[in-house]
Length: 72
Image 1 (spheres, rainbow, N blue to C red):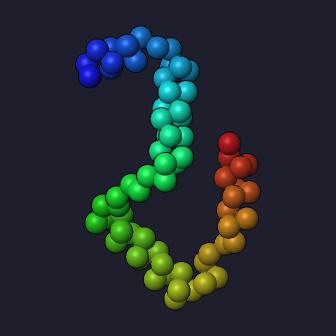
Image 2 (image 1 turned 45 degrees about the vertical axis):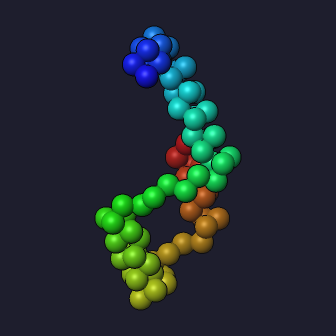
């Protein structure tokens, strides 16, 4: 494994970023389930409860997606 890491370190920053993107794409292609930590689950539960208590704090997915696109 250390030989592979050494090879990766010899890549340019752009090549390493592309490698990370390529690896990420393979995870999504395989529908890999990434486990959530207890803290992450607690945060999601808290946010869900907040949204259920006051739906006006949420925004539609299309609006959220548009905001994210503006930032890229």
